[in-house]
Image (cartoon, rainbow, N blue to C red):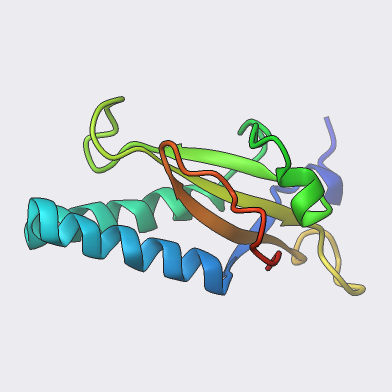
Length: 135
């Protein structure tokens, strides 16, 4: 079987939004106060690894079930659940909301970079506030 440029794995680059950065920093500070700097540091380091894993293959992740996420951002929104360094379904659950954007420009498919745009990092029961502005 012959390999084509379409068979080549996609390359992804991660771009953080200001709301995502703010959410991440707020969660880190909360964990630092409540569970200590060691746990908060492990949480942050492992979150970065989990985000990096998205660059390998973000496809199978489910679409966000936040009621109005797609309407709010005006595009398809995906989510990743992050359970903390232990990856167990207990502890600090957050949802990373992101979008996937195709490459812009005339680069060949084997070198073109898709963009993973990180929108928000929401706590377990946190929802998008209606007064927020989309990123």
